[in-house]
Length: 131
Length: 375
Image 1 (cartoon, each protein chain N blue to C red):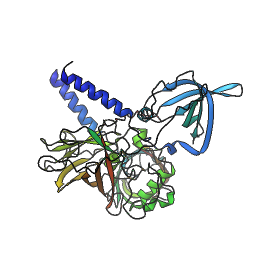
Image 2 (cartoon, helix red, strand yellow; image 1 turned 90 degrees about the vertical axis):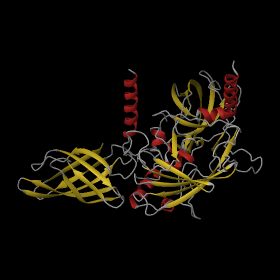
Image 3 (spheres, rainbow over the protein chains, first blue to last red; image 1 turned 180 degrees about the horizontal axis):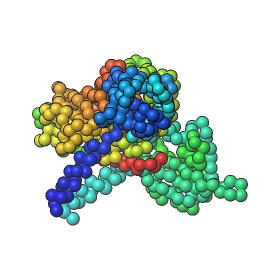
Image 4 (tube, one colour; image 1 turned 60 degrees about the horizontal axis):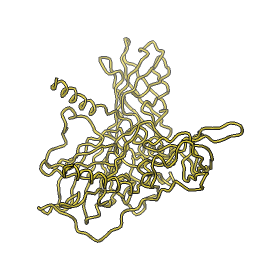
């Protein structure tokens, strides 16, 4: 019983150490979840993970087997305007996507980026929220 | 009662008495919630006194035409009110009072009280004295351990104490032209923001955004997030150093930090995780390793998370933040704190600042307990 209590305590201590969600640093850093549809070329849901190393915004769309790294990402603090691009494979080849949006509710942990996306074939709305 | 128990009892009583005599400033920016350009005076009957952290509230019914409105009157923290001689019975439900103060920015029925008068007697009951450091008795030398290393706590066998009354409660690059700001780090003129530190563009914009919102998004007060980084030495409730020389570490107890403490390791270890399981996780207080260089303790801290504001006023930081802090006890009553901020994620170059703290002798450090989601 005692070892069980210790194990639970250690687990709780470890959990406390891990539950540190980045909220207050670079506004784009973190995991984002939302929609980017409707579209024929990709599913409706999107997961985006972004990072900031002090010079460059990097990230990955839909991390996993069909992931796509983002490129040419920028954040203009004047209006908190976001732009990034990605090359995403389709049955017919590689499509170049361009995303443009704006950060809303900047001070919230679950702030959003609302904007648009487009590729060579179609375009649509983007809305993602920080998790 | 054994001598040990009676000693504890006496110490506790003494600590309580001394605590009541401690005068401490308000702990979060009033301007975040209230507009000093909207003064108002209200008279009514008290319905409830909510004696809790971070701020005490008095609820009162105020007649309005043929109806009455219930207003929330916000006061200082229980610690600060007690310092001014208040108890939770100073104003009771049923008392008729007149309150002067400033109203909430959002137009709600809330008022920050600057004056409260009992209507029956005309007696003024709210009397918060601005804080001031204790008078210096003499230029006492720095207390030292037998090996001559400076002590960061009391002298051997001396009475307890702690460090408070920072000469600066804001972090700004040490230049001759620091822009004016209040004790909470709120700039008098937001256009001066770029003079505070060598910001990257996004960090400057975020700092200005926080300033324009009167620091109302501060997670230390909204969500009880710990005051990591230099902020722990900016808060009015002070800090206390406990030197565990046998195990080569120093505990920094943080009065304004919700019973938080930070450990500075002096045993030569690196910046690895210090508790099983947190090896790779960024922390509120980072991982601090230090060493004595002559009479100064030099501390290198890294591994911060981004979940808090590391200074009053809302300067941004990233997980790349690295702090070099230098603590020098210049004499018995003065501790100099110097900090170099190196965060290439948010700033274009390392920058430095410094201030001093005063030894508050013979007093227990007040311990502020935050309560989440209370204004």
